Length: 168
Image 1 (spheres, rainbow, N blue to C red):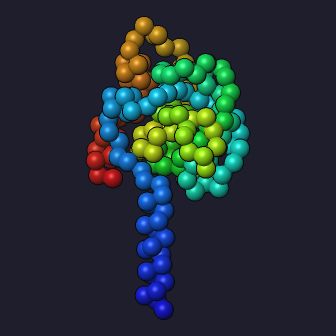
Image 2: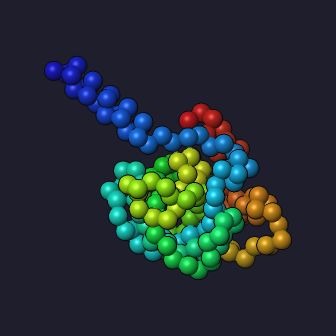
Image 3: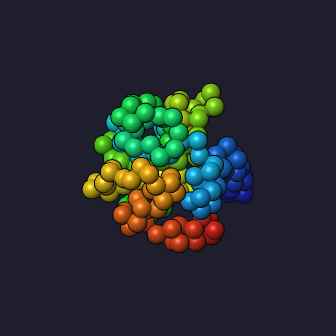
């Protein structure tokens, strides 16, 4: 009986892993290239989902680094509950209303996930921001330079994230 229970638990774990693969952090430059949209968002409300994979949230786009989303617009997007690197967040308590995040997104093409966009299933595709984040950035800089400045201002260490991604 114990062997059967362990076998079932292993099959469920594999089924979840196959249904929701999470990839290692590829580095900032590659994450920028892989994303169709990169933005700072504020969570307004939880719309749908059970906290297991992707949940849908109503968000406001505060700053857009890449993509055609207008600043200060509100949309429903899907956010995956995956590990958030950095010292200012984890998904243990989920995404919280009024909290700000840096997200690396792609257009949502999945019919079973609500929302116009979804964060990439990659460690490092969501970063929880400190409350005192400065949204005024030099728009003449490249996307990569603007994001590096944000990482520096937030105290995020890219080396630690890269090492974490490699080991994960």
